Picture 1 (cartoon, rainbow, N blue to C red):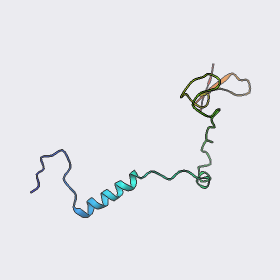
Picture 2: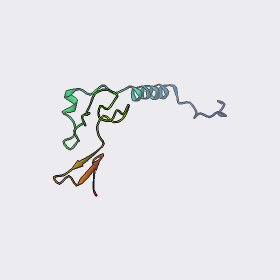
Picture 3: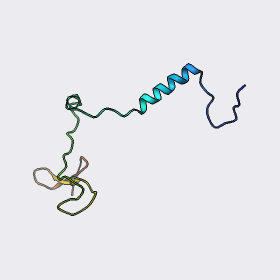
Picture 4: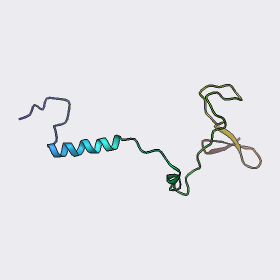
Length: 92
């Protein structure tokens, strides 16, 4: 009988162990990069990707390095009295 005094589960039979390792390798393989043809397959209710306001690492307006590429808080609505942050709107 195998020594079961170890911190791992008991080994699987050889064929099941191979199947497990194959599935694990497939699950850890990175997904292919999105192409224009896959973007057309998005759900109709999916949000459009947010476009950055500037290129590079430094915000030209504030001089901040490594910050967000787009202002996260913005005014929303016709009267500009509401503010949005990550898709949630607040009225102050």
